[in-house]
Length: 460
Image 1 (cartoon, rainbow, N blue to C red):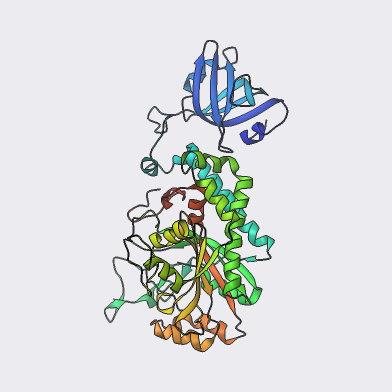
Image 2 (image 1 turned 180 degrees about the vertical axis):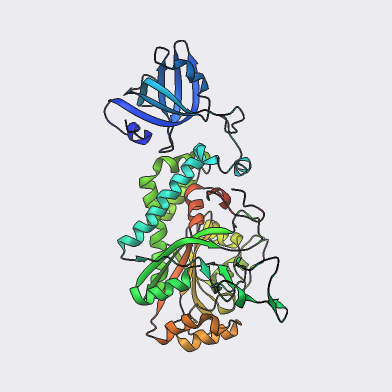
C-alpha cells in the first residue's frame, strides 16, 4: 500500500483504515502490553503517535525501535485517547526498516547549535532544523510565486564568470591548469593556456547577466548560488550563499525601492499563511519577539532616508559605536540596526550614496557626487536588500569604469548594451539567507544553510 504523509493524517477530518506511515522514531515508551511510538516523517513539525499492542505480529522487534530508527506502520487512524493530539495510529503491523546504532548523537535532549554544525548531515532530523528547512523551501517557492504573479521571466545566470560584478576582487578562481606545473608568462600565470583561455571565477552576482535580459524581456530575475572568498568567520558571512536578483527595464530608483518593500512584505505574509506551525516554533523557542517584528514590518511603510541624513542621525546619536560613522564610509551592521531598531523602529530604505563607495554600474545622480543606490534595512538583521538604478548612459558608464581601474575589454558585452537601445533600468540583490534569518530569528547565517561553506569548513 502507498504511504500517507503524517501532515495529511494530522489534518484529516475523519478516521481511516489501512493506513501506512513511514518515518523515524523520535521516542518509544513501553507500558504493560503496549508500546507508544512517536513517529516523524519530516512532512511537518508534529509527531504521530503509534499505539502497538503486544498482540501484533513482530511485537518483539519493537525493542529495536530506539530514537532515530526508521519504521513502517500499518494500521487504523483513530481519534486519540490521549491528550495533545487529535489522531493516533492503532498499529496492526510494525516493520523495522532501519535500526540505529547506540551512538546515535540525537537523543531526546537539547543540543547546542555549535554541536549540531559538527553533524550537519543529521541536524535536519531535529525539530528546529527540520522546521528551518521546511521554511526555506516555502520561502523559495514564495520568491518564484511573487515574480511569476508580476510577469517576471526567470533567468539562469552563469555560475562561471570572467568578470567581477562587485569589483571587490574576493572571488574563487576556477582553473583546469595542472597545479603542479602551472604555465607562466612574464612571471605571471598564463591563463591563455587554461580551459577558457582567460581567468575565470565563481560568480558573486547574476546581476550583469540579468541586465542583458532585462534589456530584451523587460522584467526578469535570477535566483541562484553566489560565492565570495572573504576570509571571515562572523555570524553574517559564508562563502556560498543564494541571491534573488530582479532587474527591471524602464524602472527608476523609486520603482526599485517600492518593489523591494513589496517583496519583503509578500514573503512574510506568505510564510505566515503557509508555514505558521514552523514559524511558531521559532517564535516560542528562538526569538520571542519574532511575531511582533514580522507583524511590524507588515504594517509599516518603509522610511525613505537619504544617506546624508542617515549619517547625520548616526553622528548625533547619544551612544558609542564600535565603528565611528562618517560621510563617505559604508554603514556597518551596528549603524543599520540602530537606525531601524532604535531611531525609526521600522524598516528603512537608505538611498543616494556617495559614488566613491559604490560599484561602477550604479547611476550617477545629477549632483555628480552621489549614485542612485539603495539599501533596504529591517529590524533584527540590518541590510537585507542592496540595489540601484543602473547607469544607462554609455559615456558616464565607461568613465566610471576607467575611474575604478576596470579594463573595458573585459566588459565589452556589457558596454554594448549601452550602445544598442539603452534604457533606464534598475534592480537589486536580496540575500536569501538574510531573509531566512529574518523569518526565523536565527542569528547565525550558518544555521539557515543546509551545508554552510566557511573558511576551513567544507566537510559535508
